[in-house]
Length: 162
Image 1: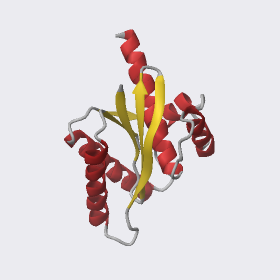
Image 2: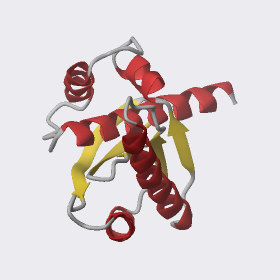
Image 3: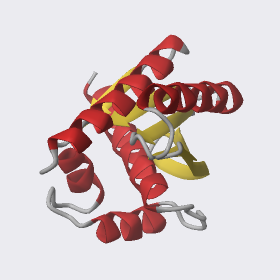
């Protein structure tokens, strides 16, 4: 059995989702969203995100983390901020001593929905189907759960091949 924390990083909202993987069986443990104030300076927002992630990891004590990779927005400034939030997520997870994997958004969508061009609402619907009874707190939490599920599937495949 393994506890996997999925993270969908964002400067304003970082989604998180914790699942339990027992072989091919997956179950929902918890999910939520970490928020920072848009009116705060960038450095303070990144520090706040780091503090929240450290507290979350200390509370949940996952065995592994999976982080969604940056996709390029039409707005370069948004892409840069997303990259900075993602860097915080990777650093804090790595500092906690757990293995951290990264997954492209298209790969996550393909793993969950079957197509890399799936819409957010399709991902959310499939996450609810794959984790029955889960009360998902928002779209970023749903994406984070999708990242965790993708990691669970990839880890199971790697074990089967290894």
